[in-house]
Image (cartoon, rainbow, N blue to C red; front, side, top):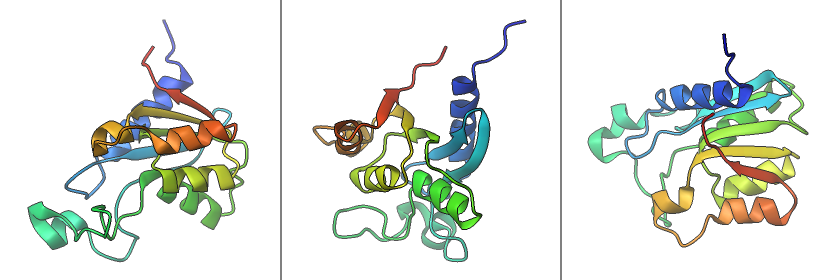
Length: 152
């Protein structure tokens, strides 16, 4: 029997986590691992204890900020990193699996937390209609390995 590769397992989990998102525009999941052990998980949405966008704001979603992004949401990678550090986990040297490549703000957090590698499924630039994946470019410029995930 062929055993699935850990990269496939972790990305599959990120895909499933994305389905937990209450965002009406994009559902994104993230899994943070060290070696083959899960440190933390996350998906995009407002901070715990605030509003669920689909419940509170219906089909139009939450209000937009000045850049046209969700005004309430934390990104999936932010949620995974914040939860890990809140609970005392060391994320330095870990690997992040995320269903949408990191935006520039998330890339700065990933770099600052010394995460060593990022696998992403889909392009944030394509989703937002941008000319390049600024977050991916930033991470690569500063030595973080970034891999476009391709299923085995």
